[in-house]
Length: 146
Image (cartoon, rainbow, N blue to C red):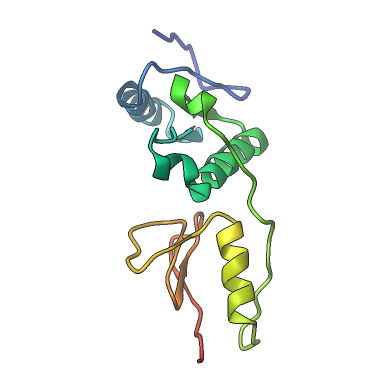
């Protein structure tokens, strides 16, 4: 049980026993303090695919970095605290109508934690001609000429 008399004035790291209770806490926090940023440090699935998923480790690293910079609340579980984190590959500036080497751009995106996929279901994934950034809602269209 966590008792609070007001919104967090410093970074707050509430610990939850499991993901379900973390989700409940996040929902309650958003209802009580809608202006306060709140995030969840996702757990790594204990499967061969989950532990080898670099994109998830980068996503976790970006979540931690954003929490350190912006403050607010970062809800964690035991599994979330013990999982690996990684940093993305920095930034790359793209200019409209400028040509880039396709493989170099794709390699940079994969190194930065994006996952190549035929079907795009959400943020942090790339497809042949569209990029779905983690923080931006609309996709960025990249035309690739063969």
